[in-house]
Amino acid sequence: MAEINVTPFVDVMLVLLIIFMVAAPLLTVGVPVELPKTAAGALAADQEEPLTVTITSTGSVQIQTTETAREELVIKLRAIAAERESDRVFLRADGAVPYSDVMQIMGALNAGGFSNIGLVTDTGGPALDGTDASGG
Image (tube, rainbow, N blue to C red):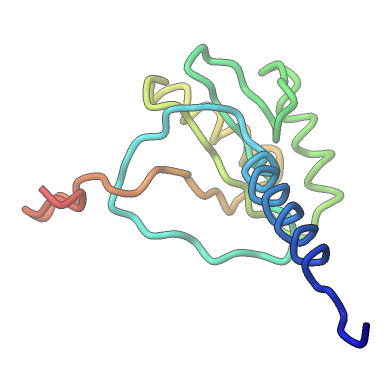
């Protein structure tokens, strides 16, 4: 037989495609929070993986996915800042968290050496200019 049968190759490639499609959503790092919606656009990405601090609806604080006591937050942030090139940090807070808690964590981020703080929200919120970004 002079021809190559590509059917097994196509079958294997389709199986690999399905595996990657199922595994890709599991690779995102994060703690489940209900982010508030705003009309703000996305920030430009860095080469370094962004540091993310999350405040859950229960008030617990997590650096990336590691829960951290509020008393130890500044100490850990200073240690992390010493190892990183960028001073950018993303702050994710559940919409139910009081404003004062968010401001306390922002103060701790600043004291820990991070002055470039980005607040993470979901898109589709009101633009507050008389139009509704969600299409209504």
